[in-house]
Image (cartoon, rainbow, N blue to C red; front, side, top):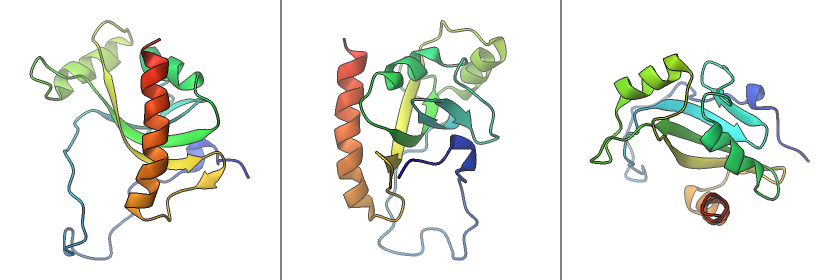
Length: 142
């Protein structure tokens, strides 16, 4: 089984309940950047725009990883304190040039080697995610 094309993945489904209404909710930091899904084939924004050429420093290391995958995350431009600066990020995207260092904050692994991981419990999916992150870190440090 292979992963779907990036354009076929829907993000952010409407909720049928109150947000944070269960003690089982997990809370994470709110990254403020450009939401993208990514694979070896490129980066795609929530509006289905191809962002591969906007962020070559993100796209190129992903191409070196073994196996197939689709990840969901936020491309952010962090200030000197490590806080996302959306205005600076928007300026970089508008200029369509690299220069300002961006960070890809991956928060979900949707598919791995053809397997749909979305139905898995968060803790199970994170095991796959941790394995992929180790490979990304090694690929970007070589």
